[in-house]
Image 1: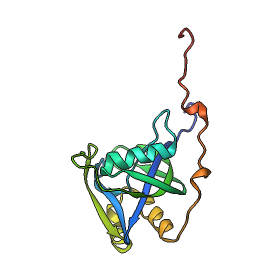
Image 2: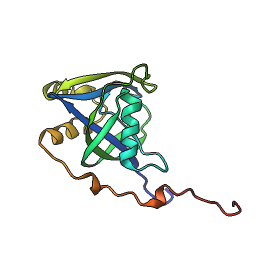
Image 3: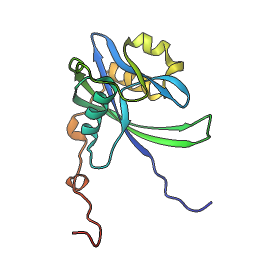
Length: 167
């Protein structure tokens, strides 16, 4: 096998709790209908906080205000159907949401949003997209928080790349 550089997929996730219930999404995945924290991939030119705000709005129609970094998580998934081996680095943020934006559609593949108690989340473990769904919620319930300033994005991320020959 050729010597290939390992690359992980960078994702962001939001852990949102209101009155003892956590906001989850139900979505279509290659493994079927699953529950997940509002989450998605970091896109080029984005900082992780911006990415999380965008993903929550796209997947829940709720504007999200991050208040803390919950943690950085590493996980690995091997898709049963394809054998694909994927490693994820997840930056999970804690925050609050405003009321849903009227008329805003949810992202393709998202079936609905659901508010669940910690016990309901635990009981639905077999339907979670990954083990990180419950792990992040458990960490939130345990009071884990880091300041948002713990995540730094260098200005170079937002600077457009100019290729040779372009001006």
